[in-house]
Image (cartoon, rainbow, N blue to C red; front, side, top):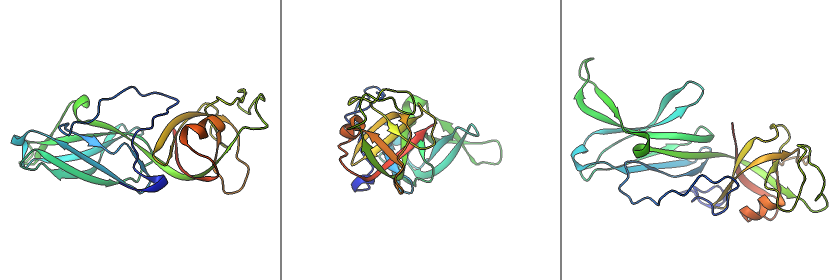
Length: 221
């Protein structure tokens, strides 16, 4: 795992947009992935297939929403106990759909190369969020009760971020010291050189963010 503010983090306790309660991994799933990483950081994938699958090749892939195709990220070989593991240096930011494809023992019709037998999405898929490093600040006092540039009333409980260019309402995933949250763009700013995001006070509290600092952030388009 990566350390500090840009760590590969566990899911946050606070979230502006709940993704539902998922059961904790038991270690016997076909695929488990580190859920949060920063760009150029390492994402670990591992899982367990049947012992009879020993020696077969596992290909980890991500779904490219632009091309509609699966792109290979890493490969691994199933060990004698059914376990496998692979690492990927994250070179794409976003909330990524990933899967593990297990090569078939059956020879393909094109000269004996292995075919891919893709497991069901519920068994061998995982979501990985990859963030870009950024500098953020927070705001609120002195502006409560006013309308933001996105025509939203700024209150102490408003969850959101300000950004100079992203359309109002764009969902943004944030990572700070192991805490994560997804909130919408609700305002414009910050206008201080070197800063990329301004968090509302409620967003800052949810992340345990108290001053100008580096965070992970990515717009979910």
